Image 1: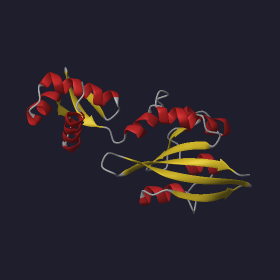
Image 2: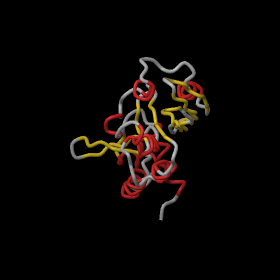
Image 3: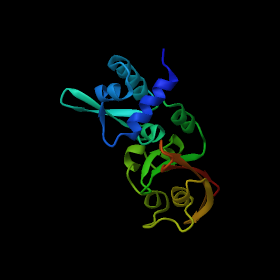
Image 4: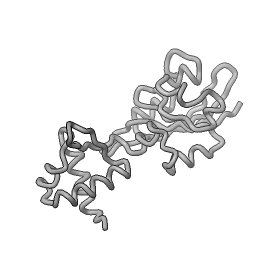
Length: 185
């Protein structure tokens, strides 16, 4: 049985570590049996809260910047948020801090292109055929403030209402933005 307090202690310890850390070091520092720590690490990894890399035969663990952002980056179809966003009739786009496309829902794919062709490109280039961020870009404001914003963007005879929401990392820092785009005209 998973104890939430133990799970939180392990996650907090990993998040506070300056570099990836081995399960034995976690067990020693928290005075928890190594096998127990390994089980909790597996649970935290399955929840997308932590990740690991192999160094030789050992795994070292580190926090994931944002479990939700990771789900978008991997296009995890089993993630309930991704599933829900894919059912919307409005376009949804996730942008990283550099305004590059991380993920789009199926509606945006219908209007623009497959995710594989859009990923990593700047939103303003793909969606508005511009070389710079839109003047009243709500995503830029959300990345700066961490708060939701809304704007009406008019480009080349098209009108879109764009509402944004911040994707936050474990320490409260905005790591990405979700845009919901309603095409008005």
